[in-house]
Image 1 (spheres, one colour):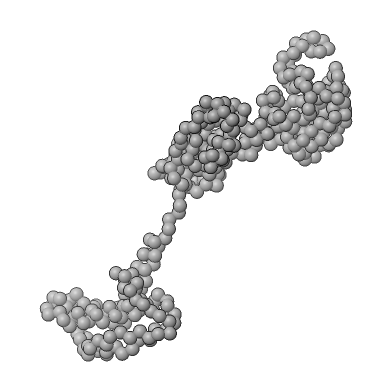
Image 2 (cartoon, helix red, strand yellow; image 1 turned 120 degrees about the vertical axis):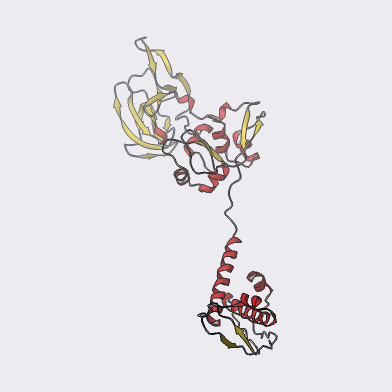
Length: 367
């Protein structure tokens, strides 16, 4: 009601607002407590009310409240019965000015409450859903992602794609309706912890997964809107995580083979790349040099530690151009091809380890 009254007021700067005079000279206010003497209050006709330039809410409310009090008084005079007059009774210990202050305070509180209700709520993410897409000839992950206005992360994670090379015509992909990645709740997880770890508003996680409670249990599948895979993971999927340290033909693959000197069958935990002596050897991935030296078997060698638990080894080098502790960029020269150590000819012995275990470099090497 107060909001409607305030809305209808038209207060202009540098102008006077003159309400109509109310021809009331005297009226009685009945006390609530019957044992206290009645009071007579004189109200003079209103002449002119000057509205200052300030448009502060308290002044507007004061004007409105005064008009309302005067209207109540007029209604009291026209009420024929005593029962009707009781509606306008004030406690005996409350003056008219005190009542006015109380009324204004209540009106301001109502105004503040109504204002807060009109506040625009936080824009939450829509509920997660997905559609299917059949891969066509010539499609790439990047192209598919762009056509649906998504990041590669969302398509890779939702479809458990480990290598972009595995994309084939006719393959069916799940395409999410928003950016993000799936997440399986682990023991000790909570929504607040997941929200903080991934930097995603808790309300967005609740809304995307249509959760009515923040209680979750291990094994629950969630979709984290806006979450991204690590740059390391994306590079690995796209085949850009590692590059060949040197060009050349593979003279000996990864796996079992007969030793070239003894003929004894041994496991070759690396690949040999044939190349002329003196050709620069580049780091397959950025990282930090953990060791350099000479070994009777491997000759001159360099070992580099990389993010993600990866480690690479470059052996049979002719020269070494780095030292332990150096930070190395991908493709940066770390030495040259040689024929040192236990070798039948100039080549690079390139080994790759993941968390201390040897793996086939060809599984992750880019072109």
